[in-house]
Length: 171
Image (cartoon, rainbow, N blue to C red; front, side, top):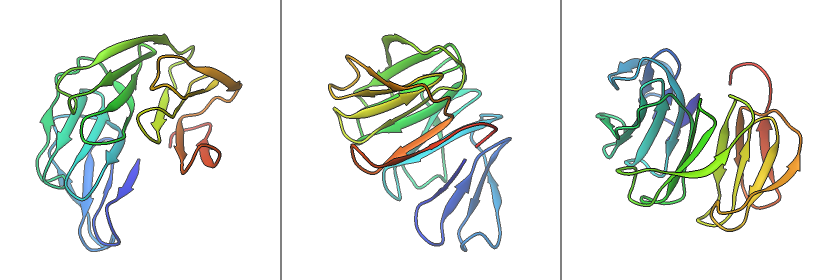
């Protein structure tokens, strides 16, 4: 996964987390205590989260330091709508939600039907989730409507009707 905070500062996840501060000319490894980074998500230049083999980690200083949020499973994707409310999917096909910045997570009781789980929320009500099927919620994840059968491993939406879905292979 690749995530840029601005034109100069960005991150690449994978077998480790790499950071650039000069637009990608040079990269250096950032210590996270997660051996695999599946997804990166930043709200702003300071607050961000990573989803990985060793759970969820949070930064409040632009990625210089990362704190484990005690999620004991490999997390495939993560999405936050503000500093408190966020969601993750994991390899046990679980969707979980936090309302306190990731200190505690509650399973939403919804199981996806494949291990390629991804989630993206536009705001506290509207979100999208994909595994073997593509879903949408308009009530914060309490209920999900099936939109189509699309095996996706990354999703990003700009509004309720416009977005991107990445399918196949690693993203």
